[in-house]
Amino acid sequence: MLSKTRTEVSIPDRHRLRGVDLVDACRAFVSVSERGSFTLGAAAAGIPQPVASRRIAALERRLGDRLFDRATRRAVLTPFGREVLPAARRLVGLAEALESDARLARRRPLRFAVPECCGTRDLAHLDAEAREHDLVLDFRPAAPAAREDLLRTQQVRAALVAAPEDQAQWAVPLGVAAAVAPRERTVYLETLRPGRGEAARPRRVWLQPEDDVPHLRDPLFRLRDALGLRPSQVVAADSLVSAVADVLGSSDLLLCSAAQAADLDLHWRPLGELRLVRGYALATTYGDDEERLRPLSRSIGRCLGTGEA
Image 1 (cartoon, helix red, strand yellow):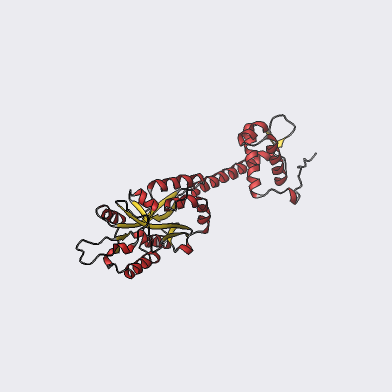
Image 2 (tube, rainbow, N blue to C red):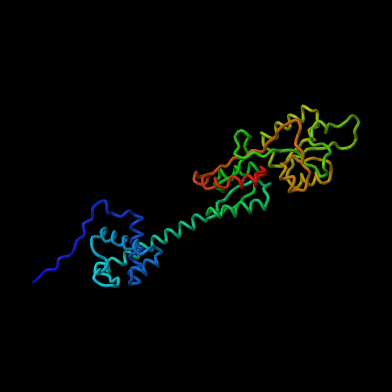
């Protein structure tokens, strides 16, 4: 009685498939087996026919036996091929599930704490650009201290935190804005000093919550005191809305950027005695998030009012 011997295919180390190659080879194997043709199977897998043939040949070397009967014109499975096909299908299915889960994870919104003064239009453009980089942003507008709290408690993954100019990634020059265009090209705070016997309420400079931080507030208060202004003439407002309302109804001034003044339909002028700059730095809970946000630096600056085109 003749005994059938099984053909073994030796597998030198240099021919062993790597993990990703194994998935691609199994994908080609499953596609060809389902269509009964190397040409049709390769087309369905989105690869050239010679590539499918090479991957299947490499898989045969890896598994140690033939998957298809080369004696026929059609792609007919060998008994060995039929045995391993279900496992190959499972591997391909798991790989596709992993790729799908990865796509969903990449598109899960990244919670991003931003200044309350960022405009809706600019944030929308930033989000649209982020989506081109396979990133969806979920903005959380908040005041400076609140942004740091949100980041520290990991309620957001990224935040634009207030920073002195020498530590900032984005710098926004500040000046003052009024409801009526000032005659002067530059506003000096000393001109706000009330005259002797002046009965009218003196003009004020309002700080919005975004600028109520030590590196902006303290130099401005020191200048106020040095110029002999009243404490009530340079004050921090409870909200941007209330500050703008006071400016619109009086000759008061709002500390802000030129871009923000334009958005509020106010007339902006630089300050004469003091250079004040809103500084921002990007802080993240994960280093990878900083890398993902890096390509958006110019658009982030536009949201902050840096004036970059």
